[in-house]
Image 1 (cartoon, rainbow, N blue to C red):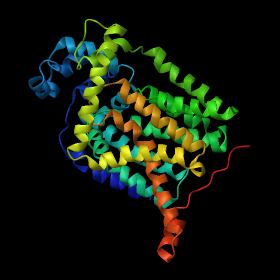
Image 2 (cartoon, one colour):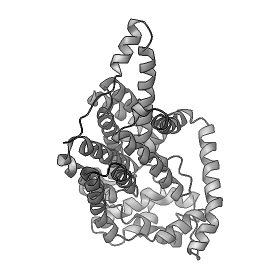
Image 3 (cartoon, rainbow, N blue to C red):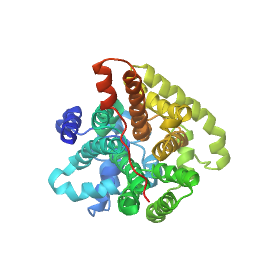
Image 4 (spheres, rainbow, N blue to C red):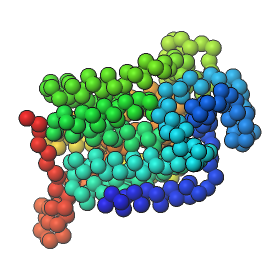
Length: 379
């Protein structure tokens, strides 16, 4: 089944494996970092002034073609060194396609990680079906087809959530997987705090050794990235609320004053994006998260340490998106995928349970096929 899902994922992004690389401003920063890690001291200038950025400079001279804008944004990418480091290692074989191939590999890894996560709670057929549905999400396939880090961010977030569930249910033998996923995620994307704070919520509710240990060690695993690379948070937020333009005023007052307008524009853009035909994305992401939260709220039998973790993750993912009020064509919203998939699976399970209450062989078969798996708590 895992091999079939991997094949489906490869087919879903098949053109990207062969087509010319499409560069975005973010991708250019990652490419510059790859060359820098390979010893090129003038990497940024070579990338942004070279042929890779030629089309972007022509289409967007105020940003990609503006040296001041490029320099202002560079510090926001310095911490995300994990994928560029891997790309630098494979560069002799793949050259300028290194980042793209890694992004596509991260997409396949994210689909398989999601399948593994769902298998911790749901039956094989249901886990495979939901993972396949997630693999075909247009924002996921689209953004994974660029030389970016989002696919690996999603894969590592999913692995971290799975490691947390395994530790909560089976004990701290799974702690190394948790620590590795968090440490790598901290050097890949800025979504590290979603699994860490979700575990913190479980620790607050459960008040037991395992979740407290996960929370404390998660913070410790994320610290090296935070200490080695300091991101100028106010400069970044001022840029985001100022229509992606650098601001001479980066005070908290400026940010607070411009945030409401930026948030309204983000909501308007996201609604417009969904209304322009992204119904499948809306059904899966929005519907899945709402199903998760509503079922946890209304159905006592659904509540467990897993649903507590995933519900907290959904709320934290919302905070993550709202903290960066800029339209990304649902690129930032990919952090919702694990929680949305969990909600979709829970909803399907409820439908199967209702079918099982009816007479008929098909209804009984569906009920048995989607019957939830059980996991023992550690002693």
